[in-house]
Length: 468
Image 1 (cartoon, one colour):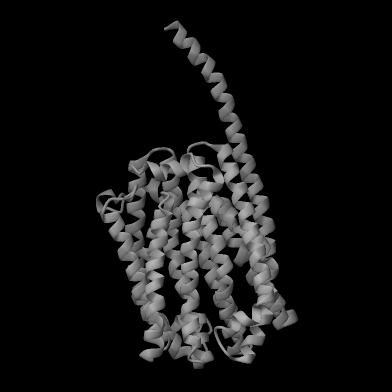
Image 2: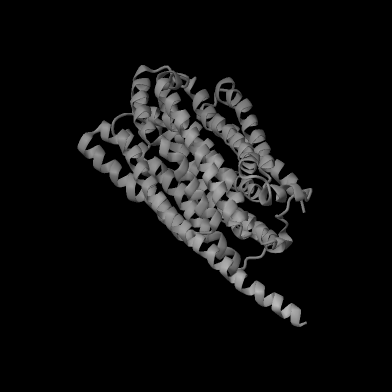
């Protein structure tokens, strides 16, 4: 066992422990941000709004692949962290191996279904005639590499569950770095356009996957993806799906909501679609860092809960909340004062830029609430609290955003369209805090009961020992 990684999870002071795990995760997310921005940046250099729009409408489908793999990665990583806290290393290996190979099987199914139904999928998400061929080229390649994309994402999550955040970060560095290098070659030099962006993405993802597999094959991990540990037991799948399904639904519904947003935007024109897509990627700078902080904190929360260190658990959540709020407020000012300059980096089209500024200044309203909302969601996952995680996952985009989007768009037109997301995010924040307070009260009550039991048992144990 790697005592250093276990020591961070078990003994390190909360701030230092969070920084040890969250900074590599956040660095990895920064690299992921560059990945999100790179395709749009180089496709934008073609100065063709229709190709930019094609990447924008296809991106949520890519995120859906991540959502499906996240069902296994998030679910297994939560369970693995708690098992390590309980010192049940054999079950931790069974869980990681089972999640990995099940994810591969799911990837095979996604590839077959995606390629077979690609045209209906594009029509369903509202792709216009001008962008259809571009989006079709991009998604065909992405679906062909579903197994690679999904396997890499799930392994990165499993690595973080055991405190190997730096290894997960390096894998993201490698994958995105290669993607950034190859993008201008395939998109501009070879003239492949959006098809070149997809090829570069797939090669980058494969490189990161090979790096992760090498780490596991050299047996440097606390857990395992060796086939001999593959154990499709009911207990393991129940634990994976209890957390994994809400986590996956959150990302899946977010992708569906993004697709619906593109569909509504297309009702105006492709310039709005392009502006909305560019904003989505720019906003990912803040969102991915906040998610990185939350996911970096997840192993600490899971381990502390599994080891019944409730005081440490509370300190970790409080410290991470303050950090998340600081990051959120910082980006609010950046996005407000530099909105036009940031959009102009991606495309030199005044109509797209004007739409983009309006969209960005509406979206930042809810940014100060985003960090704590993400932290609460990840805390539910880490604690194995599937029910509140599921409620939160269904509410943010399903219960709040989609109905708000259609209602406000119908009543107020474009203004309603751009303010629907911030309003939904604020409502979700309120719900998240209410749910979290209830869970926290339950955990504190459990801890108090354990303390009372230990005080009762301890004197009896001493009395028995004296009699012996």
